[in-house]
Image (tube, rainbow, N blue to C red; front, side, top):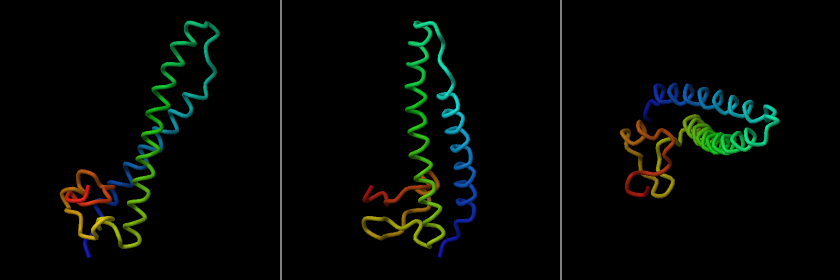
Length: 104
């Protein structure tokens, strides 16, 4: 069995960073808008960008949580399609990869 202690630590740190970022975006989106309609239009565009970034962060948070769960269950690093071991190099680049390079 492969030791994923270092990778787990990195995933947990990345998870904390993403959660903090998502919470910050959520707080920014909850702030009341400007009274000026032109300023409000500009804020609306910015809010759309922030919402997109938040969606990406949430998706990545879910992927990291899934990877951490797989580490706990002992199934981490196995391709969900073919069942082969995902190369360590791939996991270092994409630690929440669920498929090997041949399948993904």
